[in-house]
Length: 70
Image 1 (tube, rainbow, N blue to C red):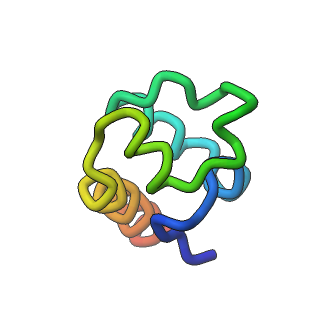
Image 2 (image 1 turned 135 degrees about the vertical axis):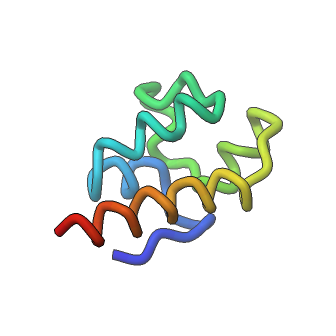
Image 3 (image 1 turned 90 degrees about the horizontal axis):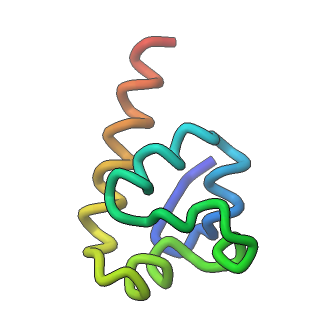
């Protein structure tokens, strides 16, 4: 799965629940909120005043590291 800023929070978490840890560390403490599941990463970042490119970079780094291990 390719994750982009347009990917919904629900899709990301369904793909890899550990992304929740990255999102919470970035300042999105409402990851489990039912209304957040339909928001894109970009929308969620905007609501929380976060830079979507920065958060996307953290997610990409995590996924790259995970792939290197496997």
